Image 1 (cartoon, rainbow, N blue to C red):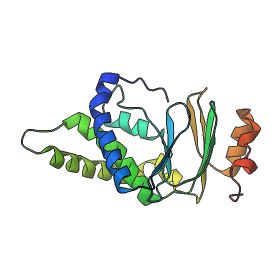
Image 2: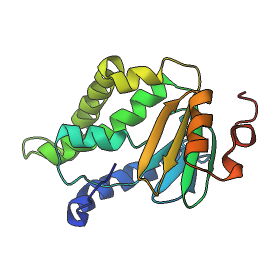
Image 3: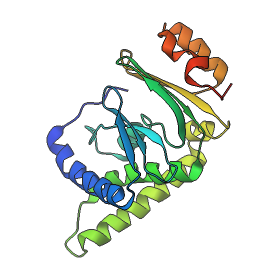
Amino acid sequence: MEVIIKYKEMEKSNLYRIAILLVIISCNPGVYHERLSEGYYYSEPGIGNNYINKNTGVPKKTDALSYIHLAKQNIYPKVTHYQYNRDFIVAAQKPNKKGHSYLLGFDLEFYFHEKHGVKEDRSEKEIYTLHEEKGKVMADSLLRNDPYYKNIFLRNVNYWIISHKLDSLYGPLTKEEYIEKYKKLEMPKKFEFSRVFKGLE
């Protein structure tokens, strides 16, 4: 899960992303964001799309596969429980296909911004709208065909573990797999299944 960030390349994409987030926040006063650890954030956009994402900026390679790889570092809606410290983040997710498609598409549209930019024969608004549509089409295709995403929707509840020391995300996991991984990683007691995921047993 190692990502090398090129900061100059980040600037253009991040400015647009910040602008979009400001619009979303201004239209949804109930939006909540919490900084977790190692660049991860928990967000509640106010429309039930609770998720955990990593602020990685633009990948070193700006091809479609690189953006798809970055998206697989996120835990998309709906995150119902989470806990964290400086070494780990854990979460429970009740998969929401509509929210998953929306936010995955939002992340993937930046691939089209980087690849195509703004053409002289179209306005910036027209280009961003087109890229948004392409991002959604790509997201919907991934949800239908990619084994990773198909696996997410096999269960009503998934569990996830992010290990910063190992630079790894484990999931989607069943309850039994979570407990096994918790023991193998020798995680602190605060991450015991019964402590974090009350009501999901």
